[in-house]
Structures are given as structure tokens and as C-alpha cells.
Length: 405
Ligand SMILES: Cc1cc2nc3c(=O)[nH]c(=O)nc-3n(C[C@H](O)[C@H](O)[C@H](O)COP(=O)(O)OP(=O)(O)OC[C@H]3O[C@@H](n4cnc5c(N)ncnc54)[C@H](O)[C@@H]3O)c2cc1C
Picture 1 (cartoon, rainbow, N blue to C red):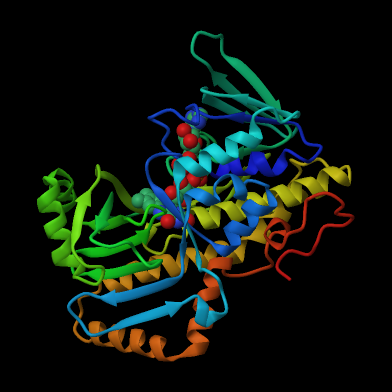
Picture 2: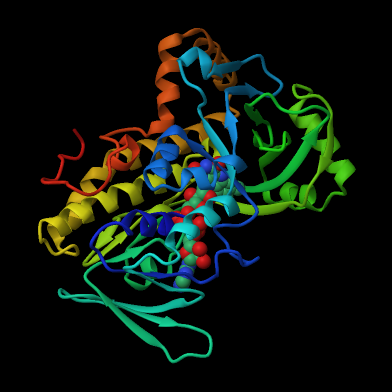
């Protein structure tokens, strides 16, 4: 999703781009545009509007008009209403496949883009002059692509990152997310729920057809059992953990599962290489921030590259790469800390921590400035917003804006 978004952002610049992807966008095994849904914040919607893809996906999304956070079995809870914050919505929930279709529809036929798809990147080397990628396509001889800059957007297990020896750290959360679509007796009212249960956080997000998607983080064994349960028992277990806030759950779709870890690359760049999206940082889905953060990586990189190209700079030079890395540092650090902190705070079973948590949620529920601050999270944590999120195109940048202003 992040690499295709970058390619979409670069399609109207003077850069020549090769996009290498292991699966066709509509392939059943596509691991990014799969059956999941993604909650995108208002900042991401603005980027998609800037890319001209929002109208191609909007009808398949559901608006998040309110957020409800609670600590199961305890008294703490908080509510956030978009209308009270002067917003139409906090964001939208979209099927990953809808995002994929919309992006691919503008990439097809883009004049300076060559898609290698389905194709595997199998080897990479870099020197001071160029990055060279070896690519395999079924039934064809191995091809060598040379570029001034290689962007690794190949996910949390990034082959490019490890082949280039860029160090990363993995912190296993000891949780697996079970994902499924479920329907309740009545349609949702646009509220997204985050419920912290003793077995892990459980999110219920509204979908366009009035049902919900569930993202439920559980210990690995419990996740395996939940996934294998017949629908009726799965719904009963979900009801027991979630409660009755949305009425009775009546239908469940197929379940999928995703092991959860924080994977963080120590450096998000090397010689003629930058990492974006999950290849740079893969987060716990608890606050729905991973793709939003990755999309800001892509939008900022497109902006930095378009400007460098317009000024006649080498887009893979150290100066250009460092401009991008500096622009992303604050947001990246902020979102990682926020997400990781949330996971750890709500699984802390030490005496007194639960009470502090509840008081924190109550304080939050009663404190308008805290709510205003929280509703800004959907725009990112630090630094200036990418031009694409501000409704500005990438053309006509006569000078690089100072990132971080
Ligand atoms: C259960 C769950 C729920 C989530 N919910 C949200 C949410 O609500 N909001 C949000 O913002 N984020 C969410 N996320 C996070 C989000 O899914 C990721 O941040 C996002 O998918 C990252 O996209 P990416 O393109 O960087 O990486 P990926 O989605 O991993 O894509 C990597 C791509 O690289 C390709 N690839 C890999 N290696 C090669 C190779 N050698 N050659 C060719 N191609 C290759 C793959 O085929 C794939 O298409 C969620 C994550 C999970 C697990």
C-alpha cells in the first residue's frame, strides 16, 4: 500500500520510476491489499485527495464519527465525538482492496512508470553511483534495474533491508491479531470502539455496509483457538469480551490472523536507499497508525524528490536522502512511542496501574484540551504536514520547504 502510494504520488513528476511488486494487485495472495480494512485518518484522506484517488475509493469507506475507548471490567472509559471537535469525521475505514484498486487505477498507463508485477526483487547492490536491483519474473531471465535511488517499501520482513545489512530491532508483543468482519443486530452509528480487555485490545471499526470489522489482539494460543471456533461460539466469546454496547452480534465472516511485533529499523536510509512504511517501522495495530504513518513517509518522500529533481539535484544523493530522513524523524518517533506506550500501559497488571488508567481515561473524557490534542493525532505527531496533505501539488516547488517547521 505504501509503495504504490509513493508511485502514485510520483506519477506527475519528471522522475522515471520502476515499481517492483511480488503480486498482481487483485491476486488472492496479495499480502498488502488483502481482506483487511484500514482506518485512515483525515491527514491520509487529504493525501489521497491530493493524489486524485480519494473519489475512487470513498464510496467503499465508512466515516468514523465517534471513538469510544474503554477498559473492560473497570470503570474507565472515554468518548470522542467528531462533531464536538468541529470535524465531520475522525477518518474513514476502507477495505485494503479498495485502496489497492484506486491506486492501481491511476498507476496503469502512467507515462514514466514501469511496473514489474508480479516480480520478485531477489538481489540488491549499491555503490556511490547507483543502486542495482535484480528482479525475477516467471518465465523470464533475471533483469537488472539501475536507479539513482532505491526505495524499500517491502514490508516488515524487508528483504532489501536485511540484504543491505541495515540493522533493525524486533520486539515481539506476544500477541496475534485475529481479524474478522462481524454484524450486529442493528447498523452502526459511525462509532469506532477500542476496548482494552484482560486478554488484549479489541477494536470494532464501522464498515460501509453497516457491519463492523474486529481486530482482536490475543495471546498466540488464544488467537489460534478463537480463529478456529465455529461462528456461533466465536460471536459468543466476542460478546463476552466486548459487552453489549452495539447489541447482539449475529454474523461472523472468515477469520485471519497476524502476529504482532514492533519492528523498527535503526536507520531508515543507507547509500542510495531509503526505507518507508513497514520496512522502516511496523507497529501494533492498536491505534490504527501504521499505514497512516507510512503514507506520510510516501507523501513526504515524493515531495522531497520532486523538489530535488526540479532543482537538478541527484535524487539519490546523501543531501536529498538526509532532507527526507530529517523531515520524518519527529513524526516517526512520536507515533512509535504513542502506539508502543498504549500497548504496554493497557496490559500492565501491576497494582494501582489499572486505577491510574481509569482516572486517566476519566480525565480525558472530561478535558476538552486533551480531546482536541487527541483528535489531531489523525494528522500526525510532529513536523509540518506533507504538501499533498495540505492540498498542494508537488509541481512548482521553487525551493525546498524547511521540514520540521
Ligand atoms: C491486523 C492489522 C490491522 C491494521 N489496521 C491498520 C489501520 O486500521 N490503520 C493503519 O494505519 N494501519 C493499520 N495496520 C498497519 C498496516 O497494515 C501497515 O502499516 C501497512 O500494510 C504497511 O504497508 P507497506 O506497504 O509498508 O507494507 P506491506 O503491506 O507489508 O506491503 C509490502 C509489499 O511489498 C511486497 N514485497 C515484499 N517483498 C518483496 C520482494 N522481494 N519483491 C517484490 N515485492 C515484495 C509485498 O508483496 C507487499 O505488497 C494494520 C496492521 C495489521 C496487521
